[in-house]
Length: 510
Image (tube, rainbow, N blue to C red; front, side, top):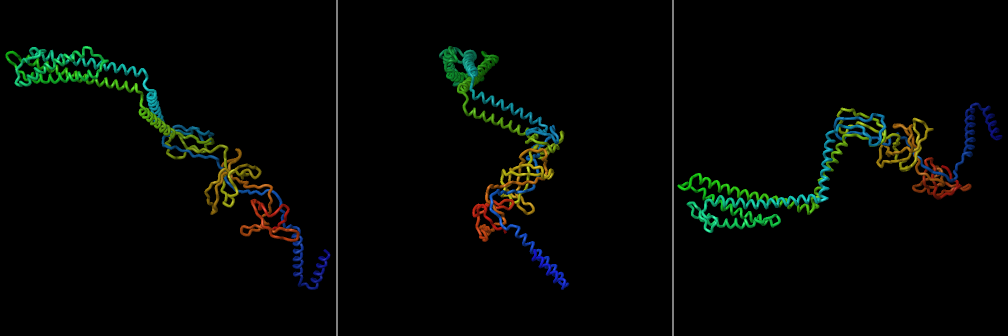
């Protein structure tokens, strides 16, 4: 200090003898003062850092907006007239709550009919799977027995009608009709026809005699189809013979011994006989068909249902159920239900109005469950991951109100904002809080990777040349360059040292 005082006195004396140098001297004093104090300050500020242990962590700060965790806009999938509006704006609803419905009486009626069809088809399927009941088989057996008795009666009736046609109606034209040489009592121009009628009478008599014997003890327990066959053959034989007799009778003319009335009576008798025999043949054929049908039904019931029939009926049941599901889907399109629990924020439906397809009528947001949506630049996106915790402040409540959240989703696709690539990131609040409202500005500090109890140095001490990182280590009065391996770089600039230094080492600060 004495030296400085002497220096100042010398300057003052010099300046008093040379006034023009006053300005120069003042500048010299100021320069000397700056040098002096600057030298002292440099000695007070250390130019090195000591390697120590601590925590290195990355924090990503970003601003986002609060939004509901779930928000849905609802509309009808089909058009129609609005029947009922169940809840207004502000109403709390649970998931599945009915909000609006259209008039749907026509679809409901079709659905009821379709369900009835399903029950009917299922009953048929169950019947096929169960097979025939003993009662059903018994009924079919009775049907077969009745049909067989009808056939037996028709065989006997066929004989009776044939016997009447020949022995009552035809024989009045003969002399000794049942003898070996019956004589046709009338002269006709066709001698061959007369011979055929007379010889045919002998053959028909043999048929009737044999047929009568077979029907005397006829019963349904015999080979009934053989009896049917023989009876049909007999009926056709009688039918053919009656055709020839009718041809001869139709040529008869009146004479002194035969009047027109008699001729007409003969013609009527032969016609009646032919008609009765033809009817008997038709009736016997019908009875045979009924017998075969009854026996077939009985055989099917005894055999049970084939798998193909069961499969076909099962397909009918599936088709009926598909119709029900289709109508249920159509009915579901006539109502709007809330897919989430929350609060109604929009209700534009009004009873009586026509609702269009896809027109948003109702909006619902989740109650009490909110999230933050923020866009994080690509320079920071690698520092965070799903599950990382975050501290949040809302502008509405200032920095004193802290909320906690965690990263729940990071979009893989970029979103370019003002020419910068960002990635939309979603954070979920840890707890519900009535103070949180949609649209609030959220200031979020996301805690990324964190390493505790590691060696670290300030980032200003590290030199980088290509891939090599070095520091200037101070050892006494010397400084030497040391290559180090670094790890995590913290948000405050601290750098983790993996190798190359030890705790307590001093490194020069750039």
